[in-house]
Length: 218
Image 1 (cartoon, rainbow, N blue to C red):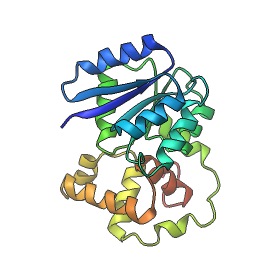
Image 2 (spheres, helix red, strand yellow):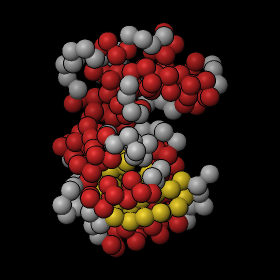
Image 3 (cartoon, rainbow, N blue to C red):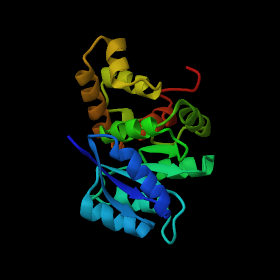
Image 4 (tube, rainbow, N blue to C red):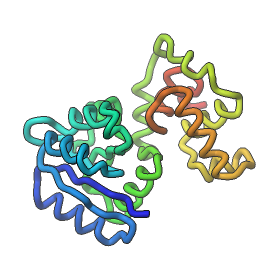
């Protein structure tokens, strides 16, 4: 199946570069380009791309605001947004994750890594490097009231899988650890997402730390 991508960046040269890089992947198709956040919102609604590569700083509506509006709209909530920026700061990182982004990459990403990232996110996975994950964990301090209640409906096996997701393991690695099939691991994760009401693995990891299910260094 072909993964459809929308490019959102105010610089035409940057969009052309990403389009060229993604064109080398047979299973990826760039279906549209936006130069502003408002254009990205409109095109997301009309094109319904699988993945949106979103710049942070654009004229008018910025990329983080556009991401929040796209994710909040039921018509475009299935679109996965990957934030692409030259500004690799904690403020941008956490604003992007809070807005509902499924991943975060800087614009110096290697071509092969970009193509892998698009495929990875299109499959419903989160895109956080180990360094980004560490910063997310460090940012989460005290538990939030009521967060633990969102895990109350999970089975012991689902809680176990959530712990492994929070440890950064892939579906295949979780399957190997628990001696189950990758499809079964994916099913447990899908059920955990549905029961907790979170959007994707990124939010599931954050929930796991906020609730105290997983703690830094353990």
